[in-house]
Length: 170
Image 1 (cartoon, rainbow, N blue to C red):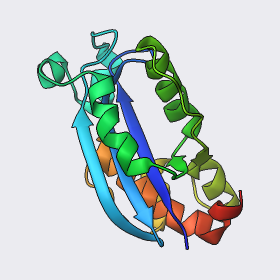
Image 2 (image 1 turned 30 degrees about the vertical axis):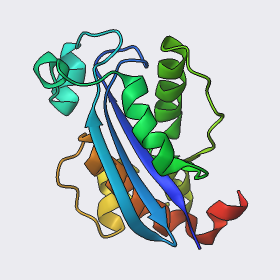
Image 3 (image 1 turned 90 degrees about the vertical axis):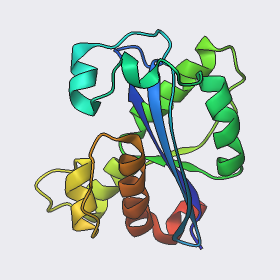
Image 4 (image 1 turned 45 degrees about the horizontal axis):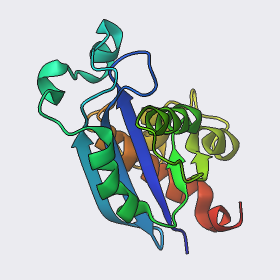
């Protein structure tokens, strides 16, 4: 049995707390069972050119979006008791900690696992270990790279391949 939640954040600017989109994909018994996507009003609320160039989001997309604490209430019930998996987990974990800090929320010490590190061990002969490359190797051709839900979905596919049952014992 392998259970986890793959998560991906996009940020509006260089501040890790400026999450402007989140994608979550729930995996239970090595099968995708649920997914969640939402735009988020970032904090601080401005967009850097380079961030927009990567994911395509602007103020127009998130002006009417809810702030992080409202979105997180929906997510925390989905991920309850599950380890979190991300491609380059240091980034996503840092964003989560920073946005919790900005909103003065108690951080529940989530356990993160990294599909970049795991894919380097399992697939050492790949030309690189970027999300789209590893995802393609695992049988999933990404539709919209740097869209939070597609990134989380690709991460979930990779996670099932690289962690197998070992995630339960890490």
